[in-house]
Length: 293
Image (cartoon, rainbow, N blue to C red; front, side, top):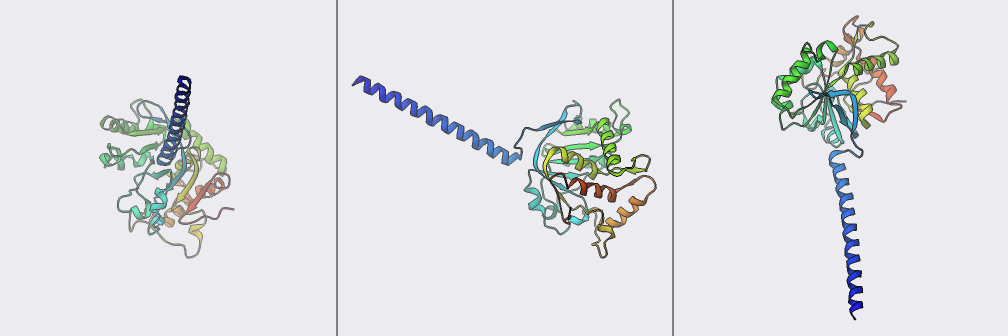
């Protein structure tokens, strides 16, 4: 009789352990799945040495399944794309483009913001908004060595150091000199033109999509026109920036820069390169839609 009781006890113990293991594994898998849904990271974050933190010089670590890359163009107005944009794993924006007041068209979330060295002073005008504790956005600042040098002579770098002193929890990264040179080389390889000799300045959109190709499994670009749009009869005229109503016309700005002998962004040339990238990388364009063949 005693042995039967002992046997039942052993069986009960084994069943209890088995159920516990099942529940624990199932819970862990569901927890991981939920975390993946929340943070949009089905893989460990990728480290990128071309972008380093201030002041610790740690590489940028990020991975996104799906990136919504939101242009600052007036093309975004009236699109009601906000919910679609926010549904992506990560939402990327450029420079100081706002969301407040434009949520229905551009969304609410900002995971990462790529910022030109020339736009840093605009962020500093609203430091609490951009860098305060309520903001967990990652900032990637690009700029030439003369402004980003760390020996005390880099004007923009010094500004960012001061921001970190005031907001030590801020997540600010700068593009390394090597990465800047790499972006120049890509421009030359894709266009056959030396950026400096041709008097060209790369745009924030250029730096954004180069980074997105490395960090995003899939890229969805919103509000970016293609290289033929401004030469299409009857094209829709919109402001250069969606948040500057009545400002200069986008296409007028693009054509002016494209033909400038020196100091111009080659927006139209860059768009033709982006179309090439879309053929080999999961990259789609919306509002307006691009037909990439």
